Length: 207
Image (cartoon, rainbow, N blue to C red; front, side, top):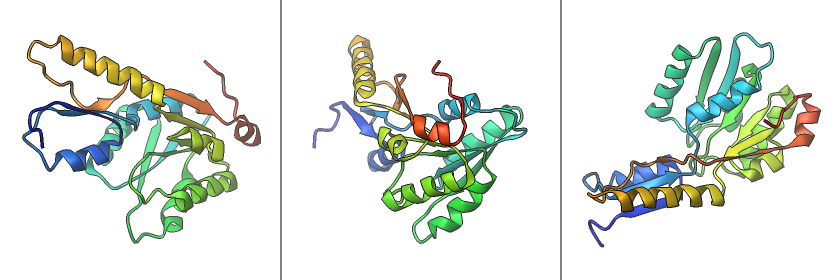
């Protein structure tokens, strides 16, 4: 309705933002602070949990997007002795058929936020299989860790607030009033489930 007025979106996933902005491809004044974390940040966190596994196998559950496949291929080429395996969950799939094989062969399992396919039933299945195969899960919200993930890497409301303010400051300071590029924020939070860490015999140094 108000073409040209800058829009800064918070609490939005990368895929949801892409779906919205695809309708307005010529509007440069729409940007966002994504709630989902970058793949590099997730892989860095996962690698800190590595013990003696060689290669270290990281399972990644996401929706099928070329961008994620490209990133995981880049990670496999650039990260020594770390293998990233990708599984995509789409409408019509049996979640057990997709998740179980990946969980069985992974040393650690990462779940990224996405569409309604990642509902409560899928989350429950991921966490049940995690305990069955003793495969730690990195989730994307505080609730995921509380429900049974080993830990979660996520953007809290405070994190989003800090990065939104930083984006606004950048915009205000720009003579051309150019909106910053949409991206995940610099601020993030990590929450650990100590009960799961104890059950899986995983040593987590706070630093």
